[in-house]
Image (cartoon, rainbow, N blue to C red):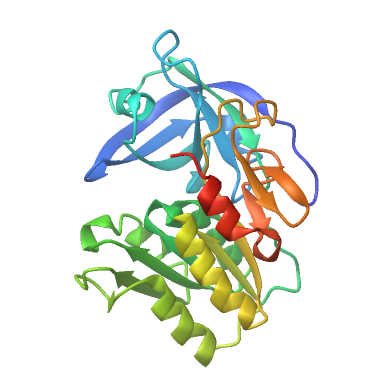
Length: 271
């Protein structure tokens, strides 16, 4: 979705520009993909074919930023596919990606005071959104949480972009000592926000949404689920909503939080 128009996805050969380990089991990947880069919007993702013959299924990857023709992606090593991805080096052109896929973060001219909340790598899909607000001169507050300081892998992404950026770590090694919900409670008690955008572990999304919806703030969440096909055919990424079962890959990954049945969604998750 770009400027209200649905952009059809394309399949494009990508070139690795960088693939660097930036934290324990976390990598920063730059993929040159001019056609996808020209049309992708914040919150959408790509479906990457990593190694033909070694991995049957593509891997869904959120895009943190777009720099010219390059998609900037953060990924964690969680299985065979992402482990193979760590072996790709600059200049590699053996992979292709389908994109842009999925629904983007909804924005309109009425939003003047947005709050972005990310947990762990869930902060990455909020990167393009933060830059959108900066480019439209809309002050944005960002709250980022992680297990510890080493896991705050995108601290620099929002610096210089956000009016106000706050950090929480479970162990207190950086910023607020505790969960992001503590900072969210403080933020919504002291400032009037009109829209909240959340991405991260599903229990964290539920906890944040409980706070913001109770305060009457429009809230959107992004679900990271296993996606075999990425186009809505396999039904492997479904989650329950008030409007019935939805597919994260095509109906989402972005959803209005008030429509998500969080308890059922968390219980149904396949890790």
